[in-house]
Structure formats: C-alpha cells, structure tokens
Length: 478
Image 1: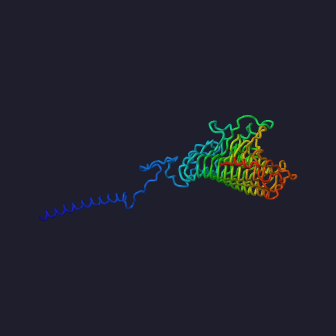
Image 2 (image 1 turned 60 degrees about the horizontal axis):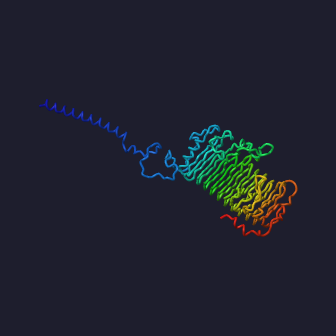
Image 3 (image 1 turned 45 degrees about the vertical axis):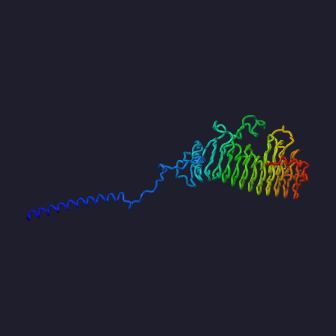
C-alpha cells in the first residue's frame, strides 16, 4: 500500500513538472509576439505619402482645363513649390544646352499653385528659342538669379528655331518674371549683319535678310509682373508685350550700346493697363515705344538714355487704323537722346492718338525734346496723303532741361489734311546744352494753347479749332 501511494505521488509530481515547463515556454513565446506586434507599443502606421505609392482608386474625373492633371509628384501640389532647373539636368556652364531642363521645370511648376522655376545664381544657362506656354495654375514665377543667354550669334542659332524671337511667354495669367540675375542677349553679332542700318558699305544699307530675334516676348497674357532683372544686349527689341492686359514692369535695368540698331527697350502693342515704373533704360533705339491698340499706360520714375526717347508710334503704316489713348509719362528723365517725347505717324493712316499727359520730365542734352511728326517715313519716296491719324488732347507740363542745338527743341509737324488739336503747354523751359538759344520752334497745322510762356518762346500754335473739326470725329476710335 505504501509502495502504491509512493508511486502515485511521483507520477503526479512528474505531470506537474512537465505542465509548468510547457507554460514557461508558452509565456516566453507569447511575450516575443507581444514585443513585435503589440498595438500598445507601436500604433498603426499613417497613410503612406510615398510619391511612388499607388493612390487609392478615385471616381473623380480629370478636369479638362488642367494642362497637367497628373503631375509626377503629388507631394509637389502644395503652394510655394520651387523647381530648380539644376534638378532637371541643367548644367549651367554657358556651353551645354539647358533648354530641356527649363522646359521640364516649367511643366512641373505650371501644374501647381504658386510654382517657382528657379535658375539659381552662379550659373550661366544657355537655352534656345523657346515658347513657355500656359494656361498654368495661378501664381507661377520664373526666378532668374543666375545668367540666362541664347546661342551666340546667327551662325550658332539652330536652323529649326525662329529667328524672330527667343523667349516667348504665351497664354499666361498671374505670372511673375523676376530675380537678381541677368538676361544676356549676345546681340553683337546680330548688330554686325550687313543689312543693319549703320553697317552697310559706304554708309548705305546693304540688302539681305535681317531677321533678328526679339529677346523677351509676352503674348496674349494678363496680370503680369516683370521686376528686378538686368536685361542687356538684345539682338533686337529687349522686351515686347503683344495683346496683353494688366502688366506691371518695375525696377528693371535694360541696356545695350548706343549704336546697336533696333534695340528698343520696351515695346507695347495692342495692350491695356500697363504700368512701367522705376526703371533704367539705355539702348540704340526707342527707350519705350507704344504701338497701336494701347490704352491706359502709366510710366513713372523711368530714366532713358542714351536712346531715341519715349515714342508713341509709329502709327498708321500702310493706311492702317491706329488707336492709342490715355497715356501718362511723369517724373522721369531723358538724357543724351536723339528724341525726347515723340509722337510719330505715317501719312495715310486712320484712327486717333488722344489723352496723352507728359508731366515733370527732365531733359539732358536731348534733340527734339518735344516732337509730333506726322510725316514719318523711312525713305525719300513717301508722298503726302489725304488721311492721317488724328492727334488730339496732348499736354506737356513742367518739361525742363537742356537740348542739343542741332534741331529746335519743339517741333509740331501735323498732317495737311488732319490737324493736331488741343495741344497744351505749361512750364516748358528748355535751354541749349551748348551754344546759343534757338528761338524758332516749328509748328505746322497744330492747334492749342500755352498756359504759361515757354522757353524758347513758341508763337506758331494756332488758336481755337480747325474748320474741319466736324470731320475729325470720323477719325476717332470706338
């Protein structure tokens, strides 16, 4: 009996021992699983933002008006995104063609709100003739802090590229072009072409193709800002605005040599609501030129010269209609220039120039300080015609300084058939830069008044209105 009891005790002890051993192994295995996967020690992962991750399916349709509905990086859709062209392969050594990198960066920036295409400082980027087109998301910025330049001269220009323009910005709204860098035009070889006016043999213009690229052109765009940049040595016009509305140009520096042909600083055509402020322009043609179809243009704080001055026109070429209205130039300086404030129209044109205000302008050694020329012609074969653009309601206030005595400082040559009307002069005081005072200002068929006596005296303005005033209404623009 004792033997049986002892056997039972040993048997129960063995069962308990092996049962505890299994529980220990079980607890050890359980804790390993808890440490690795416990929801308490490690919360569930947040949704992935990996740009390469496949997004969840969506039933939302693609917006047809979005030019780039599927940007490569959804994470770049937030505001103030910067797209550095060097990240897209731009070399910036002045030799490699960086055009593809700029186009790629533009495409990405165009697709997001407030995208910035950055050309960083300490690089020189060479790109060929390119159209940067929209529509793009609002607030797009092209920021040039380095140097941007085209191929060097006509021989280096790709044959497939347009020889009429270099950088074109098309169908954009709320776009800004800015930076602390330089836009270099490499224009010297273009100026040396034999067809250019000052380069022909014996002083004559030689025959031959004369296509030269305008440097920067904005076309069919609105609400633009161009500021801070240094723009220089354009093959032809430095900057053009065609068919634009709502333009602010501020704190630009535009320069090219005095004898560089056709290098207008800023040209505006068929554009409205344009403001040009606080800029320095020196070049070989018009500092600022205003073409047909322009209205509501405000120019202030601009220094021009050397240049051909500020010009409205030429207008009415090939018997066309030209309309310019509501232009103000004020608080500006024109120096060492062939012309000062000029209105130039062709014989045979139609339309009107009206509502022009020139105020607080300082002249420094300027020929033709105040000039209206309705006989503008590029050859000796132009004939007088029976129609012209009507020049009306033009005022000159506080125009002071010095003039080049080779020509009279005031010159009003109006059309035989369509008189200039409502010309007003006040506080006009112009003295010779060197030599004796010229007291023979020229007027032809010009009607208006002097609110104060001018220096030099001007007695050739006709008083009142021309007999044909009723007929002049036919020339007004609607």
